[in-house]
Length: 349
Image (cartoon, rainbow, N blue to C red; front, side, top):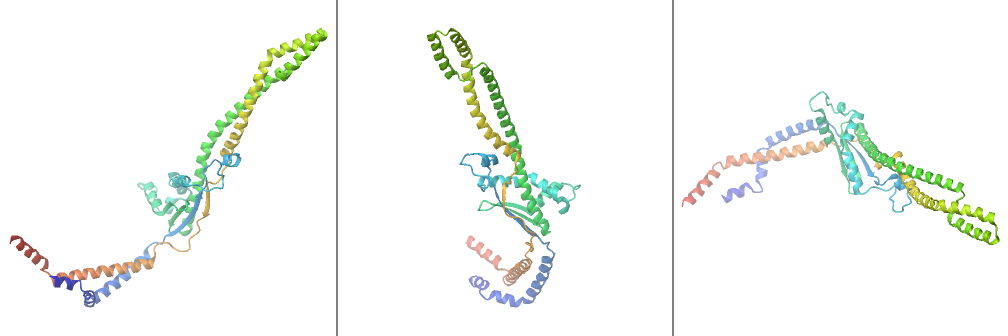
């Protein structure tokens, strides 16, 4: 049994097998060459178009442009890992697929009959097979589009990156507009409150109350001097002013303090108002394009020579394996049964 095994795995068995069956091998290799050449020619060409972009920082535009806070990142900063994940979620959204489908008429391009059964499922399968998004190690995003038409592949890739930016802006604006309405109302209320306070203070000023503390001091000194000099008319006039000041001076002080506080609040709200207004009205791209998709000049798939060579090598190896198997079966037809019989005898013994 050892000699048979050694003979089977000897260094010359492959050469002997080849010499014995070389005509068959030549015929099979020639047929496989013809078959895989024809197959390689019939395989449809696929072109790849690629867009590379960096998502921008997710920070508020108004805050980045108008805030005096030095910790702001600014609108020119690249996004970090979170921003990349957010942008990828948008790229994988159905809204992107629907907009591109409508804009470029993908049903017609992919030959999908909309009146057939499950057209959306067929389109989704085509989309997942032909379009891919991935995050690179540099925190950029790569959009790859494969298509039989090179110009159309580039058009899809660029349209996806543009629509993704539009969707990001729309989502931001929807939220920013609601936030702006809240800030706008608060800002308007603060302005109205200040106007009411100023109206009340103007009425008090019409009564001669301008500065409670300084006026009280001046009136008191003048009244004392008038009494000392025996100026009864002057003292009486000052007495009336002192009464008026006593009645409304406290209110004036209160309004003055309220005006100071409301002015500070209005100043703070004005900054927020300007930031929120900028966010609600301005559209700034949320991406930095590193490389827009260009029309590919060379097909990406298939690599025809590789299909031919790989197919011939596979058929050649499979042919040798089958020939070796048939050869050994013819040479040692009873080897396995005899071995089993010997094993059974040993067990019985």
